[in-house]
Image 1 (tube, rainbow, N blue to C red):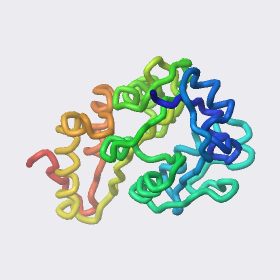
Image 2: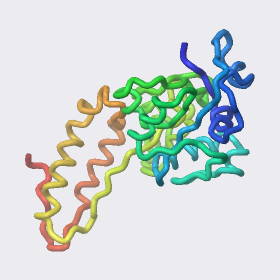
Image 3: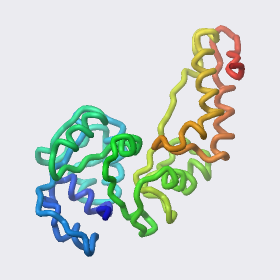
Image 4: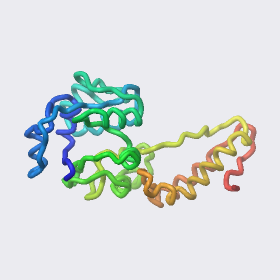
Length: 237
């Protein structure tokens, strides 16, 4: 069986307030599941991390205590003495080497390293496992889809299938490169990825953007204006 948690209990786990896996709060969310009397070991990122930022923003939204005592950011002030690891790979290694450990990593690592993911209760009240379908559902329920806001949050969106800790991955490109020739190679590569990305992302642990969002973003390539006055021919392969 898969462990079920909600945002508030997950926040308490990462604040060090839940000491053992057979805690009554976890048991209440997992009726019939035999929980071990094993100490909880938290694994967090040692360095500043966008993953930590997104994870802590979700926990701050789910728990007033977490928001007040820890807060959100790339290097949250985790209470107590959690185990610290560098990068997603370090998180996975420490997680596997530590009985009773819980960590946060990107979903592609869950798939690649065959990790056990928890089910989280989403805003619709459903316990769901992370999935590409769940990420897409979160995008469709966000202002990124509805209003074209690239920076709109994808966290804890309504919708029966929406995974509550969905984050956006960004590609940043200089809008005014010095020379078109030097920018052209990167833009060609990105445009090719843009055109073929849906097929490439299936089964990768990442979800493609909805077609409506993609069509809007396609215009971004024309906004790159090199300072030498030339236009990069990014559409030719």
